[in-house]
Image (cartoon, rainbow, N blue to C red; front, top):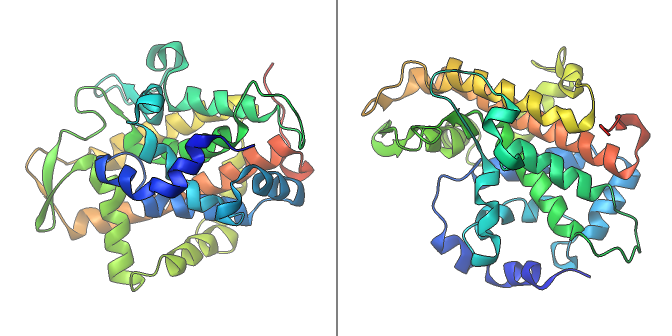
Length: 296
């Protein structure tokens, strides 16, 4: 049975949106595309399990609830989830160390491990009520997007670029929000007629038979499923240093040069998040093609 909080989300999503700050994770567009890409890659068993866990009101569409963890993170019941959306790393170190940066497992890498472990208890019709597996699915799907947003593994003092105020073309923004949403919205406007379906098709084409097709098979490489988030966090802090922070100063104006060089990075990270989320769900729910060893 789906818990009451999920039904409250479906009924009062507008209320939640009013009170949640904008710079939280990928924008809604980024999270939606990540989940759509993943759902398109699910095998039959994983697709059935996902549909079974979702509320009937969304008609089996995982992307309809992929922004739910952002919308409830400041509700009293879910305040404990707020630190799970990101990782703070030492300033300018450009490294990630789980024991140093994920104290008591309270970071996005730890959250992915935790909710993955919970979902491994899934059995259709099970009466095991230790975990809310619907919530676990939504948190895993959302956090897989967050860990691939490079500025979600950022420097502690500037809160992953949130306190670096600047201009994106002619309007005020901050560095974190540029990576969350500004680059995606500018790409949609300039190249895709504000049509997210066209942008998603372009991203999927790039990893199936386009720009990223030669290395997309390596995106699934890691020692075991529960160690994978550490690899993704390392990738993100490296990209944050190389492409996010580089050349950016407080009060700067970022425009075409920054957009044109960073847009491919953003789109590739959305693609990687979707492919890897599918790998996790296929492995968790038993589709053999993507099954991986689990750490014990």
